Amino acid sequence: KEFFQFKHRLVEFLVKEMGVKTLVFESDFAGTQILNGYVTNVHDDFKKGLSNMGPGVWWTQEFLDMINWLKTYNATRASENQVRVYGCDMQWGLAPALLLRDYLKQRNRISPVFEAGFAALKKFYPSLSSKEKKAIRTVVAELRGITFDDLNASEREMHIRYVRELDQFSNYLDAKSTMFPARQSDLRDTYMAENAKWINSHIGGRRMIIWAHNEHLRKSSGSDGYHRMGMHMSEAFKEKYYVMGFDFSGGQMSAYDPKLKKSGPVDLPKAKADATGALFAKCNEPNFILDFASASANPTIEAYLKSKVPTYYFGAGYTIGKPAHYNTHKLAETYDAIIFIRDTNAATLIN
Image 1 (cartoon, rainbow, N blue to C red):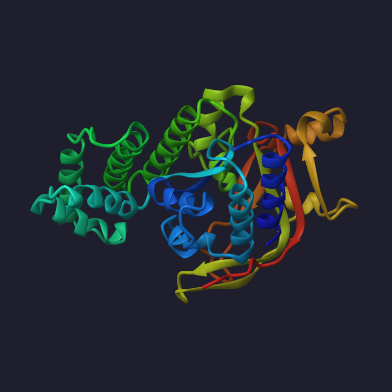
Image 2: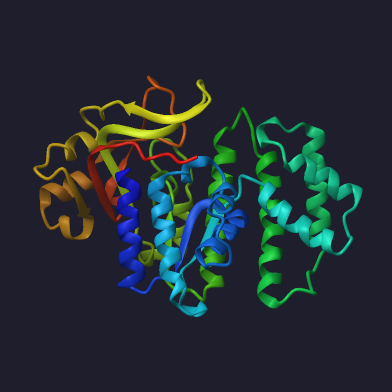
């Protein structure tokens, strides 16, 4: 709950006080364009916007409160001064497929090849057969040949990007390997960085906010060895890429339990004694922001930030009793700041 609420406050500050007009989520690139329609008052169906972003992590009252604030903010502003939202993820091929299918259907260009590929894209990707994967690759190859010349420049640019997302998704499917399990994850982060950089170019190189999991935003690898989106972004943008990571010592979160097959509040284990969250929990202030550049003036803090320490983290899914994930790293190389919340509460789920 507190992570969502702080991000809302941070977004509001950056929009109102710093003039930032672009917000990028760790969500489906094409699907988030439907949420953008809600935020920019093109339509009023927030459920349609949220449902096309990808997994259900966005279905919380706290996130909706922030989205509705953006919608209200945009309602009184000219188009060029509105805040727009994008997604940089590419794990869910259905959203771009449906948008492209609509384009083709309006022009009577739907063929059996397209129908077979689109049918496969409706399935959850881990359950796809080799035949269905081939159908997806075939439809992507045909889509690459479409120029979208009958659309205006902005629409054409976006449709070409939808094809690129499907291309990324197709490559992502083929990257899964039991021998090299990190390969698929690393490819996803590579594509997320590609999409984030494209968005930045699309908006003319202006400042933007990226809202994603700590692990995707990190600027250096840790003990897990993954090559994350943030490492690509840091290489491309150097000191202009500023990362605030979240940390906490325990509490609750709303999570999807794959065993129970439902979402709800779960109690999380306390951070182990040598973890960053356990040390920060000993501070007098329960919640704080630690900016590394200024805090490093203290030699004790600087030494800690440059030492190898474990930080624990959770994803969208969590089974009660399951051990936490820990990544050992040097905080000073991973983030530029930490936002610490000593004890969290579960976000409020909405239907």
